[in-house]
Image 1: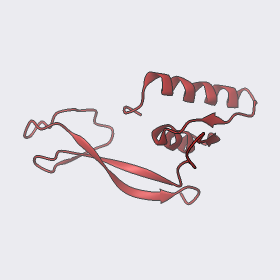
Image 2: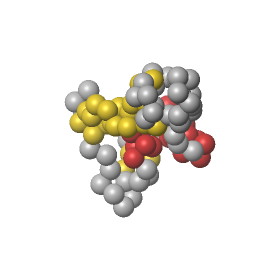
Image 3: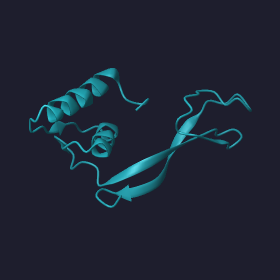
Amino acid sequence: IKNISTTDISIIALTQQLKQDGLTTVLLSDDYSVQNIADHMGLTYRGMITHGIIQRIHWINYCPGCRKQFNKNQYIKICPICGTEIKRKPGQKTKIGEE
């Protein structure tokens, strides 16, 4: 969730709130990160131009300098070992509906 904008977070939160209020909602977004989070939260979503995600990607935070991998809950930007900027890469992929 750290890689999406505050506007996207607000839209996801509004969709969740409306769903909790008993309304039928569909979150419209072509942003795969937003769709990934919506799917994880059990929200209905659709792409406007794209077909939408077909699998959920579990991202890996790593240092390209020393190759150390970091826990996804560690919100660091610079590697404490070598000082290189932390990057992320796709890890395990799960088809939607097969969790």
